[in-house]
Image (tube, rainbow, N blue to C red; front, side, top):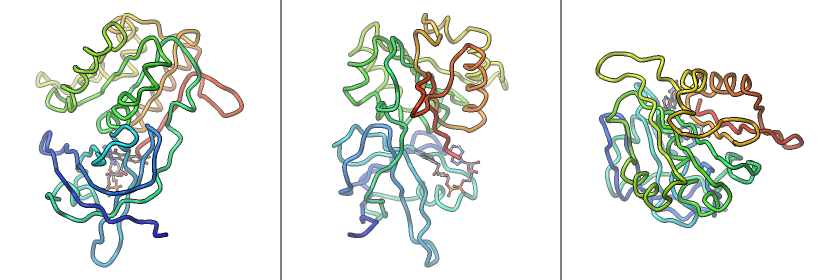
Length: 247
Ligand SMILES: Cc1cc2nc3c(=O)[nH]c(=O)nc-3n(C[C@H](O)[C@H](O)[C@H](O)COP(=O)(O)OP(=O)(O)OC[C@H]3O[C@@H](n4cnc5c(N)ncnc54)[C@H](O)[C@@H]3O)c2cc1C
């Protein structure tokens, strides 16, 4: 059986000049919330493929992906230009270990994302399992400006559905007033602002933390969490932190 399925774009939803979501009809194998598949286009006779997290809950159609356009990026600029009806290759087999199966039990689950990594957390939030396993879920979305708060309506609806259990906190690093490096997620953890805004403890006893996105944020946040006594989850030695980097 072929590695690739030919899908078709159903909608290209623009959030900003750089951010968009593609809805694609394609019959791929079943996946677990938190996994990714690969998307590809044939460009100048070559199939250019990149991994992308699914935004969906398992079983949902059409498939949904959330993107940023990277200037001069070989694939992302072309994805932004796709219109309904356009063909696109989708890898049949989803993959990845950034799933709840690898996250031990805790009272609080922290989901820390920068930019497009929000998508993988929307998938986890849409899956029923998360709400059964954790008393409290805190999603932190690092964005450069207010206009990048994609999926805000969906997140607000989820907060209404899970009163007292779900909080969304934004870390806006470049508001109109100028750059605010002090509002980056690792800095907010270091000075305790994130914990105060969440009204929740961030300790090895209380929390599991999933971090996804920009590798600099993932590394800096990991360092801060280690200072708080947390460590990475390993298959033979459960800890408190699960990570995925996008580049
Ligand atoms: C497991 C996994 C899941 C991913 N899921 C997503 C996703 O859901 N949405 C998404 O937009 N990207 C995602 N990516 C990144 C994606 O695969 C591509 O790298 C990205 O779309 C750029 O592709 P490109 O061919 O245009 O440029 P590339 O040559 O692939 O990347 C060029 C540069 O762009 C920057 N970059 C790449 N991805 C991002 C990003 N997401 N945000 C900001 N800067 C970036 C990096 O500096 C990178 O070196 C994921 C990557 C991995 C490993």
